[in-house]
Every structure is written in structure tokens, then in C-alpha cells.
Image 1 (cartoon, rainbow, N blue to C red):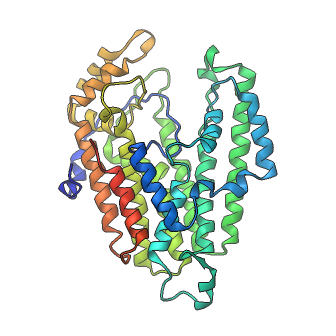
Image 2 (image 1 turned 90 degrees about the horizontal axis):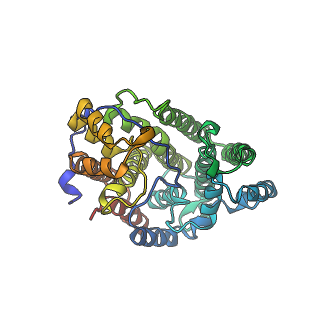
Image 3 (image 1 turned 90 degrees about the vertical axis):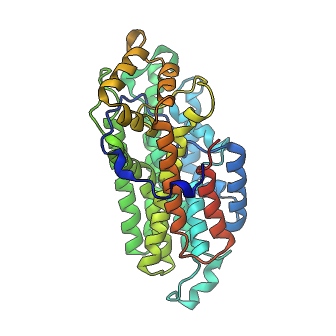
Length: 390
């Protein structure tokens, strides 16, 4: 689908979406990714532009004595299915290059914008590859915050455990480690934030932390309780909540990077909008993957993802409940393959693709304030990578 074809996607068409029944939330580093090969090349090219592989951006903190001790303790979880173990593995074996994406975008937009006319000439010696040291520190802080929340989100509900998940004692220990290590990362991020000595940047990034908390609260409120269905959320509310949990940190970090370089409010706003729309486009791409990669392969998908929310809006609450009923197995489990086929037969998937392209175009529009450069091209290529579909 052409990116320009859906540039003027009318968001108002989604006002009457129906409710969502949520499966257990999937934990991932950037909530999914586009085609691995294509994405790896985009990230690799972008890393060369900013001067070093950002996959090691948080190495100073990750190799600290405190976190090394926590890592040793996490080894006790081997043999269990605690999410913290998978998260820890991902730091070492990140085949999709998602681990430091937020920090990479912050560095790219910093380089694309360059120094402002108001910047003190004495700060020029502080630049490496066209990026201020404070902006590199901000990129690291952004990743530490994201990683901290990622670890915290891996806390399991002890009431939902099965015997195959592992001993109760080990799972409780895993929860304690998730809380402690997440708190440690967040504390380091806050310390680094204070060291930037910029009140507005502190306000922006601390606000993003609050947004993350609120967004995760909304996600938890959609999780099923006693196998009950949730109330209506609709695509408009879905977009607002996804921005809080997936877009606010990147958007506000991009704006903060412009503030550190003393750019005017207009440029700061453009950077914010790029981060916002790119994040939303990326999340939509992630949600679409189970529906555009051929037949159902056994990979579960959330019933509050964008294609499902849009599908419910098109078919209506009554028809959706009937489809869910037909897909129910014993114990109120769902035949996801059957439900997936019903969703693919509707308009939800196509609408989600259009919405992904719409936000991709909005992200590209906000790059026009930056002069042509390799960094700007890399930011554009990131958008192209998440708005191309088979």
C-alpha cells in the first residue's frame, strides 16, 4: 500500500468501536518489529550515522556491581518460565535489534537537528559526530527508563501460575528480583536526569515516566478478571492509551533532546510529533504481524490489539460476542486460530494498515523542519520500514 495513499486517514471513523476481551499481555522489547532482515539493515545503517552501536548504550549501568549481583541471582530462575529470565536473555541475544531503539532515535534526531543558532559556541567542543554529550546521556537515560519498566512489567500474577511455570518459591523470588532490578535502573536514570541540570528536560522526562505508569494502569485494567469481558474502549481511547504506554517516552525524549541543544519551541514540537507518530506507527505494525504473516502459527495475539479493536468497531458488539462465543473451547479458552480467521475476513486488518500509514506520514511531515542529511534519511527509513506491508 502506498504511504501517500492514506496520508489523510480520517481518524473520526473509529468513534464507535466495541469492547475488548484481553489475553495475557505479551512482553517484548519494542512491542514487536517489522521484517527482521529489513529492520536490521535500517538499524545498522543508523548506528553508523550516530557514531557507535547503540545496542551497548546502557552498558555502564548493566555492568555495574549492583546489577551484576542481581544478574547472578537471576540465574536461580533457570528452569522456570518467569518473564524476567526471557527479558535478561534478550539483553544478550537481541536478534531483532529492538533493544535500544528509543535511544537510537533520540541520537538520530539530535544529529539531524544539529546545534541551534542560540547554542553557546563554547559547547561545540562537546559534540561528537554532531551530537552533544548531554544528548547522548539523555538517550541512555531514555533507554534505562524503558528497560526499568520492561523489567517491572515482567512481574507475574501468582494466582495465574500453573505447575509447569515453576515452583512457587522461585516465581516469588523472580518477582522480587524484577522489582529490585527495575527500581535500580529507574534510580540510575533519575540520577542521570538530574545531572543534566536542565529543569525543562527534567519536567519532560519525569512527565513521560508518569505517562508510562498511567498507560500500564490502563493496560492492566483491560486484563480479564474471572473471564469477564471489558467495557467499550474504542479506537480513539486505544490510541490515547497506547501513546501513554508506548509513545510518550520517545516523544518527550525527542523534544528534550532539542531543548538541550537550545532549539526553539517550533523545532521541539516537530521532534515531539515525530516521536509520537513513529511510536504509534511502530505499535500498529507490531499488532498487525500475526494477521499479515500468513496462516496462524500458534503465536498468540492480544485481543486488545489494533486490528481486533477496529474489527469490533466494524462488526458491532453483538456480532463480535458471537464470534468469540463460537471460538470458545472448554474452560473459556479461545481457539485463537478460528478467531484470527474471523478478524482477517473483516475490515479491521485493512483499517489498521491504513492507520499505520497515516501515522507514518505524520511522522515524515515533521521531519521537514530539519535540513537534508544522513541522519534525517535514517529517521525516514525507520518510518518506511514500519509502513511497508506484504
